[in-house]
Amino acid sequence: MLRGPLKLTLCALLSFVVSPLANSQEISFAPCALTGSGGNGNLHAECATWQRPLDPAKPNDEKIELFIAKLKSTSNTPAEDAFTIINGGPGGSSIDMMIQFAPLLSAFTRERDVLVIDQRGTGRSSRLTCEGIADDPESYDPEKVPELIQACLARLPFDPNFFTTSAAVEDLEAMRAELGYSQLSIYGVSYGTRVAQHFMRRYPNSARAVIIDGVVPPTEVLGSQIAVHSQEALDKVFAQCAEKPECADAFGDVKASFEFVSTKLREAPIPMTLPHPVTGITTELELGHPHLVAWLRFSLYAPETTALIPVILNEAVKHQSYTPIASNALRMLHNITTSMAYGMHNAVVCTEDAPFYASEEVDFDALSATYIGREMYDTLSALCVEWPRGYMHDSMKQPLQSAVPTLVLSGENDPITPPAWGEAVMPGLSNAIHIIAPGQGHGTIGRGCMPKLIEAFVEDPDPNQIDSACIERLQPFPFFVDLLGPKP
Figure 1 (cartoon, rainbow, N blue to C red):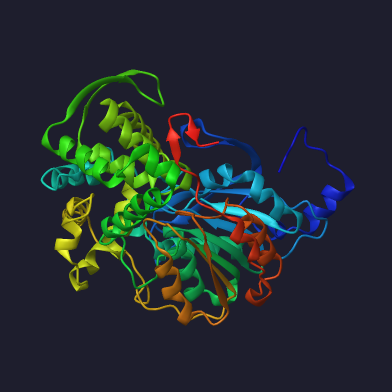
Figure 2 (cartoon, rainbow, N blue to C red; figure 1 turned 30 degrees about the vertical axis):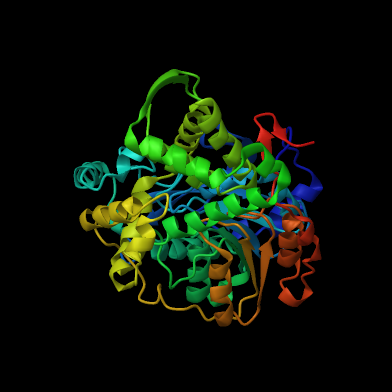
């Protein structure tokens, strides 16, 4: 990581000479300053743009531009492998995640380069956006979807058929080979675990160590079980509040409060005027049940926002104040719509997930009984009727069998990729360990001692040497007893 003026010292010259970058004729790095989506965070790194074929089978035809960022190792003799991270979504920027976790990633540069590519269609890599199709309450009406999808497809700058996981792992392997790294050590989160696992399948000799956090098993499909898993996580909140005297005394029956608010917002939206929590602009809003769904769904991802659920519901029931629900829903929807590339999201889901819905045994009664309902499932199904099915390797949905050293991580209260999904991949991984982080949600890389465990595993990728006793110190974030915070 560059800090201050660049100094060309003897050590820097030696580092440059032995760097795998010297083998590349096509990818040229230069110092850069990176800022995350929405202006969040900044990072000094080395960056490059790279031309790749749109269709991997036609290297001489149309090209797309991919963006790569690197934190150079501080070692005079860096490891021959590079460490990389892969974001989720699908549609999230891996480089934005690199910026977010820069302080953690700097530890890896003591031994090796940190090399991150924005997956094709995301972030700075020929991003595929879909205005009007986003994780927004208005998008959950299946009747609106066909028109929105056709409008989006007409505006896309590239054929979306080649913005899938199969194309992405080919990019990742080509980048490794082009830059001369012997192997990659990989961290993937959420949908990024699908990419990491498929890379292990396709290029086992190129994967030195793999960490998959919030696991999507290759045999599972995204979308059909989100509502059920999220309802299970919400039910845990109700039960945990009832078990904690400080929460139960402050709020009583939180499930009853939720049902009151849910019924009220289903019956009629509440007209509101409030400052937008991100932009500060005065905003007119018809607060409806879909906003409640958005707020709860994204709150359950992290223990800190989960801890606010009882007090915010109580504000609505006891004080008729719906501003906290509205503000949190607006903030979360703003963050997700600015950070996600929904064209790429659709390309993946409509190739690798929705086509397999018919083969699932979906309990629609159970789906309809969740607080989300079956609207998300119906919308994704309708969306993918219109969206073309893209490029996918035949092996994509097969169970993974791999001897690559693998660290499998799950959050105990993960509302979208539950620990059972982490456990489901273990039979096929002959050199792996599964660690469940107590009280945590979706994505554990920044939690407690997890950064140290991941760093130790990358330095010595032997699952049998992982001492995970430190995770027992992780706990759920204490419930807020009022808007000022938890009980002292």
